[in-house]
Image (tube, rainbow, N blue to C red):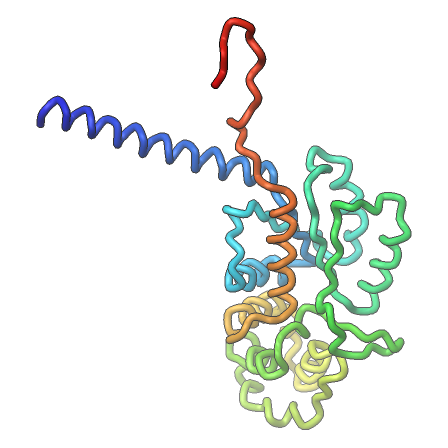
Length: 252
């Protein structure tokens, strides 16, 4: 190899190492300057990455971090605590089921002293799908999908007891899509001596996310919101700093 070729190879290697370094720096910066996506529980924590990935969200590149607040009872406390940490300046998208409890908590948050412009509340689903006993119209995570996709996943061998898998058509005769979906399937299972369905909720959420052939509208809107917030809060390269003025050094 000639001296010229050796020098050229060294330049290429140096450039490759520089690119790897810059990529690592920006990944670290994206994490440090993240957007927090708050989700209600294990089911959403499992399903949202799958769904948002289908909607074109690249978590590492955009710096999106999922934070599971582990149940609606922890919702306000988690937001309040977040605002007292070193992450207080980071944007938060807080997803919450648009059911009776969720609706009440959103109202409570809107009246709270720690309501913050960097927190965006995102009810799931945005558009009402079912009606609750008190007349509230809304829904929960399961209702962002189509009825067919929901029932197909419920009555699959990964979620349903083998003795009930083939009884979907029987269940559908009494199924009312204007009432909360999950509770109807759960009651059907209990009536037929299958009490483990409630322990399959995370598996159901994962199946719903994997099996859906079209991206739910709510997920598309959530993806758009993430991109909009990232556009308004650009990831800054830590190496982009303003150098101090030195009289005898002229910067071009």
